[in-house]
Amino acid sequence: MTSELTFRLATENDLIAIVTMLADDALGAQREKLEDPLPESYRKAFARISRDPNQELTIAEIDGETVGTFHLTFLPYLTHQGGLRAQIEAVRVHSAHRGKGLGTKMFRHAIDWARQQGAYVLQLTTDKKRPKAIHFYEELGFVATHEGMKLAL
Image (cartoon, rainbow, N blue to C red):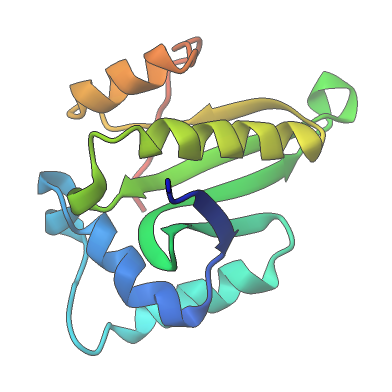
């Protein structure tokens, strides 16, 4: 019997699992604070996300075990005739479950969901220091059509 990957919106009880996955790589380890208890900033951010109808912090599970997460933001625009963009960020697969195709399944779910919500594009940003991630996104059909820029505040 094969266990199925399921998706649900995250709850505050999922924060430790999410932050653990976010911190579980070289870049994430530099910017996240994985402490017990978690810093209050994570709870405040989760509260803001969960109150915003354009934000969806999603948990991927197999048999009730958290195996991944991603954050979708729906951005209403006037461009593209009042179109809706979807942005996906903070995509992580738990280290014990990497290499099993779960990332692809998570993206397929996010792509289908964004389409169902009426989005005309799903966009993402990734750090240039993540060449494996960039290759993965290209394999999924993402194309680097724009140059992303950031201003640290």
